[in-house]
Length: 278
Ligand code: KIV
Image 1 (spheres, helix red, strand yellow):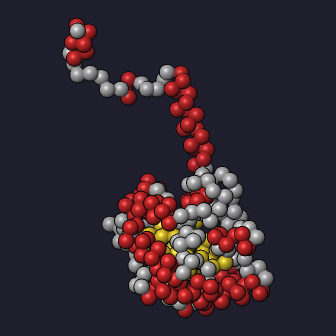
Image 2 (tube, protein in one colour):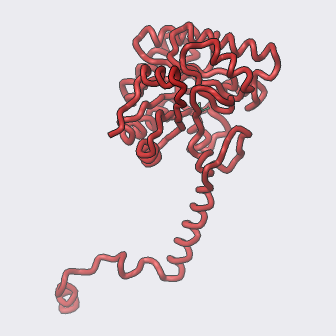
Image 3 (cartoon, helix red, strand yellow):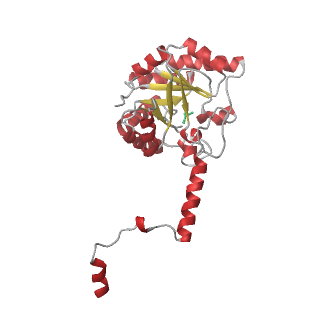
């Protein structure tokens, strides 16, 4: 039976040079299959705004939506480390709001940790949540909740000044008590400097080699159609499978092939004759 990883297991994996593999999940079935496959962690990312709700970004996502989807993932994957993603607006207003919302993730959705975006500017928030006895994962580099301020979903850290600021952010995240940090959309040279500077696990998405990788499930499945970031590798083309299945179903119903004899419930022997007699 699979054993749920703890922060100490994740730290040991880093120390032993063993990569952690995780992805996003937003629903019960996907989370169940991911656990069955042996995924190390599941993130109920605020990317659900795009992958599930069809928003153009993550900014509109609410606490209620995150809690709702995280509960489903938790139910499906009781033995997997589940990360709750703090949506925009849930930790920017005050340290106290941030703690209340982190507590909601734990009490209502049973997460193992929360993740939030930003470095130096969110250091007091990370400190307060982790002083409250909760695990926090930082998220630096390309932080989608600030895509407006960044001028879009753009790679970060491509100049020396920008790279230095991201390294400072990662250090601030660590020094504030985070147990791990996610680096998104930055050059591998910068990721390496972060890995060398921090003793905690550094995970990446579009950040090259580090202590583990996370991908968005609808990207690796080949389901998300709107756009494909450079850092995504599609491991399947499930959108085409959906198309084939939907077309075949439509054809069979319209042509009378479905439902067939094997899909119907016949009356108990002798009962149909009684109906006719009445
Ligand atoms: O919300 C999300 O899916 C994320 C990814 C960038 C990992 O934070």
